[in-house]
Amino acid sequence: MKKNLFLFASLLAIVLVSCKTPPKEDYSWVKKGIDVASAQLKFTTTEIADSAMLPRSIWVGYEMDFLCEQLGRDSMTFKDSLRLKPIQRLGQRRLAGIYDWTSGFFPGTLWYTYELTGDNALKQQAIKFTNLLYPVRKYTGTHDLGFMMNCSFGNAGRLSPSDTIPSILQQTADNLISRYNPQIGAIRSWDFGKWNFPVIIDNMMNLDLLFNVSKLTGDPRYKDVAIKHAYKTMKYHFRPDYSSYHVISYNDDGSVEYRNTHQGKNDESSWARGQSWAVYGYISCYRETGDKAFLDFAVNIADFIMSRVKTDDLIPLWDYDAPDTPETPRDASAASIVASAFIELSTIVPDGGKYLDYAVTIMKNLSSDAYLAKVGENQGFILMHSTGSLPNGSEIDTPLNYADYYYMEALQRYMELKGLEYKDL
Ligand code: GLY
Image (cartoon, rainbow, N blue to C red; front, side):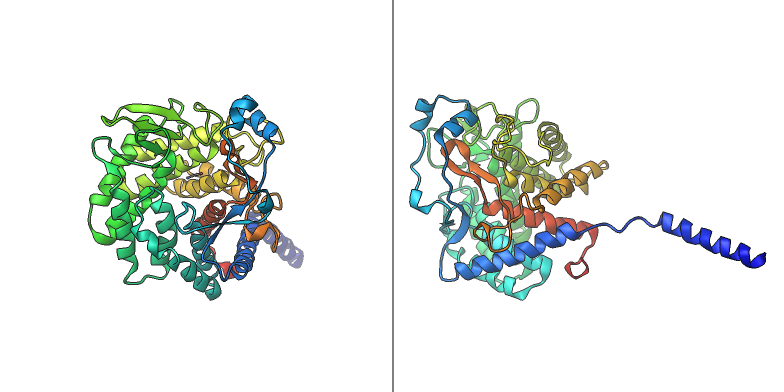
């Protein structure tokens, strides 16, 4: 009898313990993402070993009628604004020079993948492709210097510090703040087009360079410019529902000249990547300043994004207002930027769980066969199905190096948040 009681108690204990132990979380999608990235980057670095150019996307064509449908525009008016395509290059890897706005992303992706894996071969390639960008420190012709130099040299400084990196970043930041106009209160974005002083929402992403350089040098000037730019953008770039215009152009007295959405469906539409740049940018501003106005604003943008993206997998249509059809191109880059931003946001706000869940859903979907490339395919890029600039007939439903960059950044942030090590996956 005693023996039976003992057996019964032991069985009960086993059942209770096994009920209490939560199922082990499945991180196979994380491992798959990192392994594919690692293999694709090695494939690409071998293929372009002798090139001084950097991978940007794959050349793709487009059907004029399809684009007109997407834009809801008259084909005759539309046709005139399109650039000619280099037909013979379709399907090939599109490389970019070091002064292209995307030049920092490939080295940055190598740095993140090195950080995640500890693979020294990736580190050597990261150093090589970062060093290609050394002349960019003297470039004054764009606001994209943050993308170019903070994603490359900024990550190099974080993961493999050297004496020269802070001065390279400072020289670049000096050139970026030389584009700041104190009367207007913003950094000028483009030097082309019809605009008097165009500022694009993407420019929020260049502020991290300025925050970084203020920390490296102790000189507050860079951070001050970043804060002024962020406040000006907060005031004029957004609609009452917290969606963002792409371009706001200012008159010399700081008043608004034009409100446009150059890469979106129309001026009043919500271009997907623009919304992603916006939320990411204001989360950075809060991290670097502790100013609650930036956090509240970021939360409002985040909630707008969550309320407007209706796709099952949370990878948005290229513009939230694009036709809701299965043929409408998605933008995986917009999704990976949001995933990375939301992981950070989830660590700041009390109800952060909903942002983390959203980010994880995006990342699991990007890590599925629907978006993640097969090794040796996709011209060596990690993700498929992004959209660069549909209204300009450019990079429609193709890989983009910045989709890869923010996907790897999101994986890195997730691994850090969960305290995961690659070897334990
Ligand atoms: N910064 C340009 C773009 O997002 O397409």
